[in-house]
Length: 208
Image 1 (cartoon, rainbow, N blue to C red):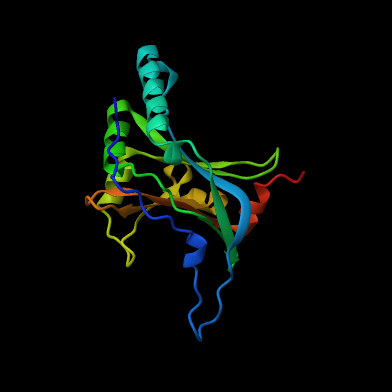
Image 2: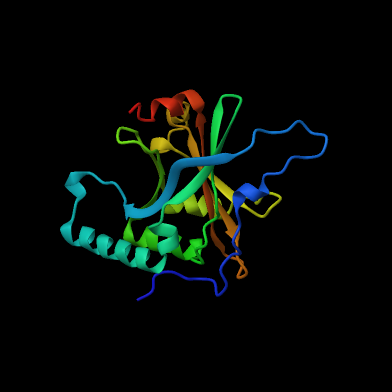
């Protein structure tokens, strides 16, 4: 049984690093460089209290998650390299190559709502003692994203904060989940980008 709707043609490959250009006569911007960090998108069960735990329901969620990984391996089970630059005390990580998944975000949103699942967007730092940072994307976040205005490139963005609290951005930054329209008029995933104060980022890396 297939949960997800897919476009017949995948989005064309795009190296996001190649999109960074400097205008003639303008002050050159800091260049992006490769990073050892990665971003990862996963489907997980919506966090609940132990008093609401149901074994059968949880088992069904696990089966659905396994099916989603099989149907959308490049979206929901693969780590993605990022590039980075620093500007005015802010460290900006950008997914190096856009998602190549053909999965419709609209169909994914329906599955998340029906099965009480969410997406976990994680930023992974290298080093045994380093701390990773994770953000939750609910079906409500996706609904708001799909109705948001597009930018000049046709992309739509939702800004995510740890625990959904904007004040946490001072310590953990924020992540942008970006989608683009497909040929059917629906949307597919484009990238995960992560911004945070450089001083806060340094504290989350291992010293060993």
